[in-house]
Amino acid sequence: MPPMTQSNRQRLATLVLVAVSGALAGCASTATAPTTRPAAGLAAERVPATPVEATAELAAAWAALRIGGVVPSATSLSPADRATALGQTYEGFRELRGGSILAAQNAFGAALAASADLATAQYGMGLAAALQSRPALATEWFEAALRSDAGLTRAAVELNRMALESVSPSLRRAEMAAQGGDVAAAESAYREVIVQAPFLAGPYIRIAELYDASGDVTAAIEALGGARRALGNHPAVLQKLGALLMREGRYAEAADAYQRLSDAVPDDAEAAANARRARDAYEEAALPSEYRELADKATLTREELAAVLAISLQRLERYTADRPGVIVADAGDRWTTRFILRTVQWGVLDVYQNNEFYPRMEVLRSMLVEAAYRVLELVGAAEGAPRPTLSDPPPEHVLYRQVQAIVGLQILETERNGAFDLLEPVSGAEAMRAVERLAAIVRQYGS
View 1 (cartoon, rainbow, N blue to C red):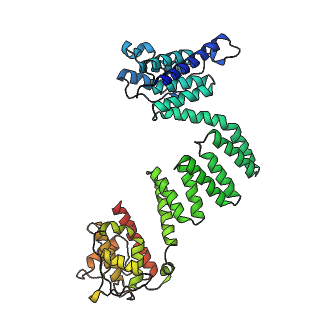
View 2 (cartoon, one colour):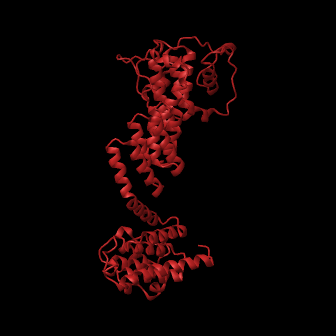
């Protein structure tokens, strides 16, 4: 830690003096100072983590403070450990565990005299003040501890605990108003809570829920937007916001909220799935109207297959970004033009003689097999694909191994009689199911 300025040292000295003098004043009158009686022992979970710089002996004693039970006495430490600022801090927490607040303050004060920025000792002073029911002083000490060590999460927990205690009356009033259906009064009370404890997400979420229940979804979304501005990417806020935006069909905004949630909690599979679902919904909403009709078609053309492949397999761009463009003489100006060009550039679909694509050609199962197998080759999934024995096509057929892989990976299936029938036209629904399965394989190999 950088050395303290003179003004900071003076403030620290004042805080120590206020803390200790408060305890001493309590000793003078049992009628006005509840802290003159032995306090209940400090709960073990309120002791901070063992400092990394503690010696092995001190670390073992410190660990005992955090698991409850018998706490080693100070005399169990070596004289060298007892004389250090950390040793004095340990003694302070040991005294707090035993309910001796004044002795604890003296120990913490000695630690701070030796090391003015020792966050654990500052935190200990905050606990002592809290146990004396002196919230303002406790808050100052906890905030000082966090300034000295932002990683001292116990200090943040204690600040939250105190804030929640201070806002309890407003929370009760807000909930009573909400139960009575008085949205305006409930929001007003929740706003009071936000002013008193601006780091809490719950009041913002409850305001949004109240507006949502009353049918004003716009106001609910605006309330959560205010929460984001105040709290940043808070997971609970993002989760609620994403759900409301999805319900309202605002898929782009929902995808952004869910993606930020997924980034904030990268190990949360549900958050990742929601982000993907929102992106899919956004992409589908932005698709040409012609695309939405493909699933109902009895047969597909090559240009329509190009659209299904290009839209569902956008991850292939990473495998083909450096490939040169290919001339497609008959791409024309169609709703499928960009999809035709993309799939040809990927090498998933071919042009024929004179660079003709033949957009209106009917798609057979053989064409879909060739396209799907090329996708598998691009992502490295073809070589290890399961290859079941097939009777149709026969083993000598040029597409036999490709069909084996496509069937083995359950991209397409054989008929009930075991035949694959390469010359059967492909329906829209069949093509979409096959490409959806193919997209899952691409995601698996591309992760």
